Image (cartoon, rainbow, N blue to C red; front, top):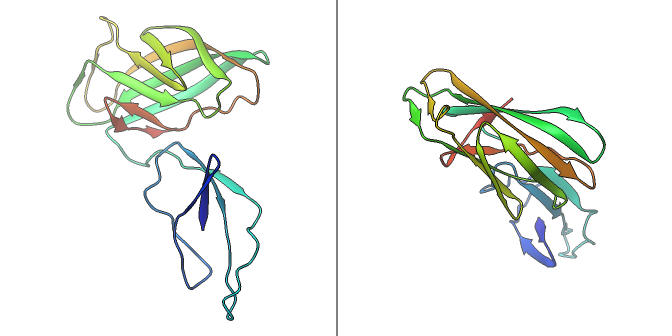
Length: 168
């Protein structure tokens, strides 16, 4: 199995059977792969058509994020993000980060947090009034106005202070 990484093709692995498990994938990332087969005489097939898939967020974590497109008008929308501390310790001071799946997506400003975007990475940090998330369900909500010029593919993986959050 080969991964297409821009113009470079990287071999992910080889197996004698018909199934392959790929490891070391980043949560919330898109991957494109091709499969080549070898017959019993050692002849290699043409590459399969490319298959693109995305990895999701973990099922359990010490944080949870719910991302919602609340009002879409075709090239922009209002996004709402609920951030929940599902751990046993309070979170004092937080940074939420995610990466846009497509290069044509951006934020045009937000509320209830300090928003920045560098390349395709978006970060939002707490304000003075929402900086502590109580353990076992403490939640805050942030929002933004987003823009896009192609399909609006919503992000699927978020980190809170570097920890990958479950999503739902």
